[in-house]
Image 1 (cartoon, rainbow, N blue to C red):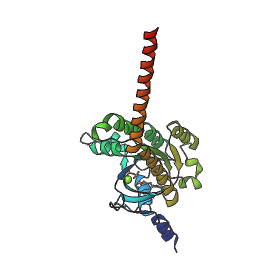
Image 2 (cartoon, protein in one colour):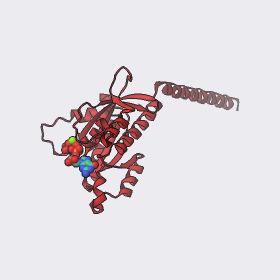
Image 3 (cartoon, rainbow, N blue to C red):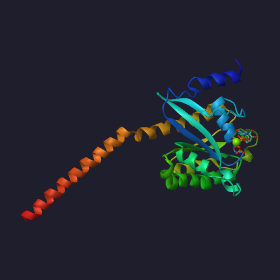
Length: 241
Ligand SMILES: Nc1nc2c(ncn2[C@@H]2O[C@H](COP(=O)(O)OP(=O)(O)OP(=O)(O)O)[C@@H](O)[C@H]2O)c(=O)[nH]1
Ligand SMILES: [Mg+2]
């Protein structure tokens, strides 16, 4: 079997083209970063097992532990936000970012600018969409990962590295998110990063489950009743005194 074929079969043992009847919920994942950092290659590698296939069917069924999730992927360029002309309509960006349950913040390890822009402007834009506009247009809470792409370029020329790994890890840690370094030319690490993100999305969804919320509401009510009983007991003591 050729190496290309084995990548293909490894890929397909648990990721399938979307089948709505098997998983009811659709989870939106956005690949967000500056132009030319490798968003399309990253997505193609994850969806088709090859970079540069311009794979356009971007819905996939993924098995995350024991659950099937219908995942819709989209890549958005943060450069567009800065360079677009006055006729640019930001509605799609706002809607997709606001609705996303997971975001891959992608930068190129050989471009400090791509790291600085994605961790500053793009990250702030994402949370602005979530916090201030999200409620009006069905915004959802989300999980992020920070991914440094193009590490293959460093094998021959380590001096090309512009983003210090430790610095990126520190930033990610300060935001409570995971950091990966990889090349979109290899399927395994891309798959691993996306699955890690999906597992954390799944955990987040479990916590937001209506049953959990009911328990929390019940706990709140119990707490209130307990407070009321203490208040009543205290006022009785005061009256007696
Ligand atoms: N060496 C190397 N080149 C890469 C890698 N990933 C992407 N590239 C190259 O980087 C260039 C840009 O990749 P794209 O995937 O088109 O980047 P993009 O972020 O989608 O760019 P825009 O669509 O312009 O926003 C292409 O020439 C890719 O072949 C990688 O991991 N290693
Ligand atoms: Mg692209």
